[in-house]
Picture (tube, rainbow, N blue to C red):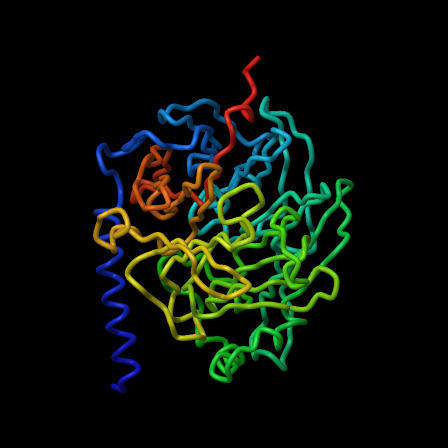
Length: 418
């Protein structure tokens, strides 16, 4: 057995141990579920997230359910749901069927669905977009111009890139009428990512198989070769004068190649990228103005990618991190790991999904998605609030409590129930 194979086997064994340990120790600090920590200094507001039971929730700082929403249409399930500034909610949805059950959490967010909806807090459908050409997956965001940005995918044959059919990640901007007003395809800009020859060779050969690791979705006929899992427009309030980071350009995350990149909205070119700083990252976005760290990139650095789908061959670290990056210098200016809270580094770990959000008081809200753990830390790393999702779903063999991502809204966002 060659040395590289030995190293990979050691990493795989270490990862398996770390996953078991993290699951055992990173969960509830005081009680099994619900609010487990509450200290002075928490940012006021409500935490909004979708749970595997098919509902979206708003949780107050006392850990109580302030509001609960089902899917706004009959015979449908709801996945990732995010609050909008106008008081409505934006969600991924799919028809109710056994195969769609996973859409309410976990790896289901990687599975393409046909529709997304906006609905009011009283449950009324406000807007719906259905795509019969592309698959909508992972991320969606309401833009400053009122349009909606979607991460999507197309299956296509490009023999000069791969011997296998590609599942190519794309971006679309959709207006209020449902018209696609802008589209961007990764396959047209692959050279701009600057992948090394080893990675391009691995893509050409299809990595030798489908995903087999933790959090892997069902195999498909097409080859998911880069796996974009986040996209976010740079807000005008980020305040950048560097044209690479002008308002409206889009920062994206490619999980399989450990790469964050910025797409120029006008030229379509990739104008900035960072590779190898994070592993299998999620929820890459620019911190908006008015918040500490405005103009920096905040990212959940998972620390894991299945080796069978990672052409960069950097596949595991036994802990997760939150990174704040200055894109002008490519330097990490702040990070959170469990040892910053006085705990063993491996007690904070989510091998997939997850996210982080900067708060007005300087704290950071963290969603450790694989464990359904949502917590808030100060800049110094003190945990001032923690909530472990109790709204799980069981198939009789295992229980799913995962949370794809969470967001905090101000207290004024939640409307009084009629």
